[in-house]
Each structure stands twice: as C-alpha cells, then as structure tokens.
Image 1 (cartoon, helix red, strand yellow):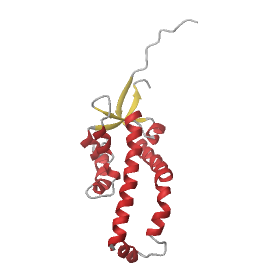
Image 2 (cartoon, rainbow, N blue to C red):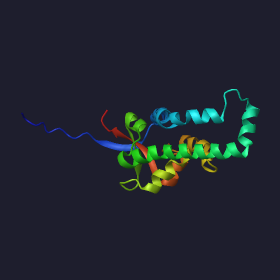
Image 3 (tube, one colour):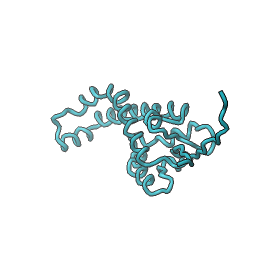
Length: 167
C-alpha cells in the first residue's frame, strides 16, 4: 500500500471554551455527588433533620457540638474532592469531566506539581477564606481573556483545548 505524503494537521493549544469548562464541571460534580458525597448522606440527614426550618437550622449550626461535627464532616468531604481532582489531574491532566469534554489542565512546565493541583482545587475546602473562591473563581473566569479562575492564576495553570488550524 502506498503511503500518501500529506501535510500533518496543524494543531495548537488555546483557552478551553467556557461552555466546555462548565459542562466538564457539571459532569465532575455529578460523579463526586455519587462517589464521595452519597456515603455522607445518612450522617448529614442525622445532623440536619428534614423538618427543620431556616431558624431551626441556624440554631442547630450555632450549637457547639453540632458545628464542630459539621465542620469536620465538611472538611473530610472537601479533602476527598481535592483527592479526586489531584489523582486525575496529576496523572492525566484531566478529570473525568474534562476528559469527556476533551480539555486539559496545563502549566508552564510539562508536569503539574503537587502545589499547583492543590492550589487550583482549594475552592472545595468549605473553610474561610477558601469558600470566598466560590464567588471569586467564576467572576475571574468570566472577566479574563483566557477564562482563568483566580485559583488557576495563583497556581500558574490553565485549562486548554486543542484546536486545528484547518477548517
């Protein structure tokens, strides 16, 4: 069989499309909900009875015994979520959602370092000041040219897509 001498397709890396990032995030959150958060549901149901009103929930949270347990459970769930992203992004530069959407985590160096993966995922720790990233990260993503979150800027990482120069 004769080999054709065709030019190679010209590819380049650029910022991932915003809709792909959102879709990847929603896929990852669905997986995290099933794999990580579901086992904690029965414990959370005991801590937050369904018949509690808003004021009842505030009273429950203000009691010292419950607030310490709630903080501990939230912290443990946050650690498991960070481990999910760490193991996948460190090894493959993609979470499952990013893999499905064909986008990647990149850094200036070839390999992602431990501190970079941790910093970019601190948003999942439900502790002050990290929960401020719940608001700041999406705002930065919408208002930067490269759609980078604040935690990505701090970690010197970005989410990229691979694009073709060919039409």
